[in-house]
Image (tube, rainbow, N blue to C red; front, side):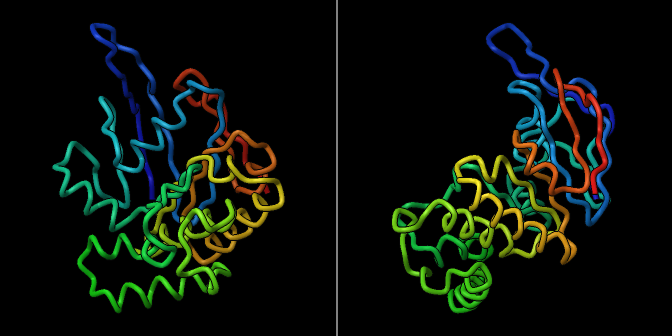
Amino acid sequence: MIAISHLTKSYHMGLIEVPVLKGIDLSIKSGEFVAIMGPSGSGKSTLLNVLGILDYYDGGEYVLNGTLIKPLSETDATRLRSQYIGFVFQSFNLLPFKNAIDNVALPLYYRKVPRKQREKRAAILLERMGLVDRMHHLPTELSGGQRQRVAIARALINEPSLILADEPTGNLDSETSEDVMNLFSQINREGKTLLVITHDENIAERTHRVIHLQDGRIKDQSPLG
């Protein structure tokens, strides 16, 4: 599913080059459930952005599902993201002026799927998330856990093979976090590959493998289970 070798990434602050990823070697098999942990500034979010084709790397190689990911036009990058990847964020990233069903259906709108078809697919996913009575509510009318379930449904709408989640339980209480992780475990059992960034050991323990980053490098990898 994912194979990266000698991956490097730096950012420029004026004339200063700041290295963030310093030669990452990593392989993630299809169907794995992996957590990435590390202190602030360790490169977690940068790595996730590269894996999600939201940012480009400087050196090394990134292969996703047999496709070498290299600098692409925004159109091609968007197409690959739509084809392979679903995203879940700590801050949910829902459009505040659209209700739950429209938020979930949004990726299909960009693929020009007819309205009735995308609403039907979104409704099925929201029902699965236990939100059948919240489909027409705005994000401000939903709890944090409900908003995250809407975000998870949106991540699934294109039927991606890979889900990338950046601190998906960071704004949730412990009980709601457990509900979200139960959903992720169920999604993983159905064959999806999941990669979760988290600072919470309890969340990491729910995954198959934990990768620790430090100073832009992989410090260690701990199999769990």
